[in-house]
Structure formats: C-alpha cells, structure tokens
Length: 248
Image (tube, rainbow, N blue to C red):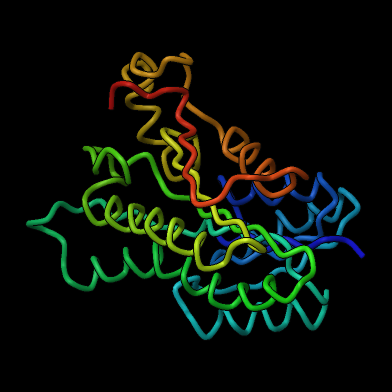
C-alpha cells in the first residue's frame, strides 16, 4: 500500500511544489485548497505521475472541515504518513490600519490551520506502527519580524512565529512516533509575490548570498527530505530556506 501525504494550500506555489515532490517519491496525495481550479490542475499533474490524488476544497481555517477531510482520507486510503501545513494568506496592513477581523483572519489561516490539521492527523499517526511526519511552512519573517513587503507585516509575522512554538511543543508531545518540523522560506517566487519581486528583484537579489530569489521547488526539496529520509533524527526544528537573505 502506498504511503499517503496531505498538503494544505496545495493548488499553487509552495504547496503545489510540495505535493508534486512527494508524488514523485511515490506518495498518494490528498490536496486541500480553497481555489478549486488550481487544486484540480495540480491533482491532474499528480495523477499523470502514476499516483493517486484526492482533492478537497476547503478553507483551512475550519476545524470541523479539517477533521472531515482526514476522516474521509482514512476511509479511502487507510493511513496518513505525512502532513504538510502550507495554507496561508497575506496580512499586509500596518498596526494602525488593520481591523480586528483582519487580524483574526490572519491568525486563523496562517496559524490555526496548522492546529486544525495536526489535531485531526496526530491520532492516526500515533496509532500507525511507523508513525508519521509533520512539516509546517512558517516564514523567515517569523525570525526577523515583518518587513515592508505586501505580505509580511506584523500579523503575518506573528502567526508564522506561532508555528515555530507549535512545532517545538508538539515535537515533545508527539515524539517519538511523529516528527514535527517547520520551514522558514525567504523570498520565494510564488504567485503571491510575483508583482512584488518584479518591482524589486534587483534590490532583493543584491541581499541574497545565492544571487537569486528562491523557487517553490527549493522549499519542496527540504519538505520531501524531512518527509522521507529513512534515518530521520530531526524533530522540533525549523529550517531556513532563503539562500542566506542577509538584507531584507
């Protein structure tokens, strides 16, 4: 029986790249996304690799829907080996402009979504003989604080920082059967950042030691490693994938 991975925010960008990378490793993939056309395209590309893809349209901030999806996945596939928490949303307004509802939404999509899917997935993984792996996508801004970009002001940075606390705590709670790690991407060329990068690419690249902005595949390669390496002795950690972004 093939192993199974669930990826939230899987329709495009980093989530799509993670789903395809794990499919390339032979995993059947459950995709969760609010944007159904993007998700269905990714599902089709995964099926073309010869593995199964199950698509679930959902708002990742819904606790009840997370449990429904995991229950449906277990009924269909019988197991869940890897959870990739990637769903996220920008929160570009500064403190003097953001509303309470906008702040709450940033927390719900960027942080609570991780809790939702871990809460649903952890009991399954703990019962499995070989446990499971959880990888959550945080952000470099969790470490540096929000900057002037359209994505990473205080609410986004705070939510992404919360992922790191969740990761460290749950690594203790769920070990040794389940490893829990996080990724902190820097500037990654996704649909969300395309306009920002095009306006500031020369300046951004000048502050990155590797001399380029990142790609979703750069992040997905680390997610695939944390999800599949047979000798994994890593948990409760975060991995910065930024090409060494020494200047924001």
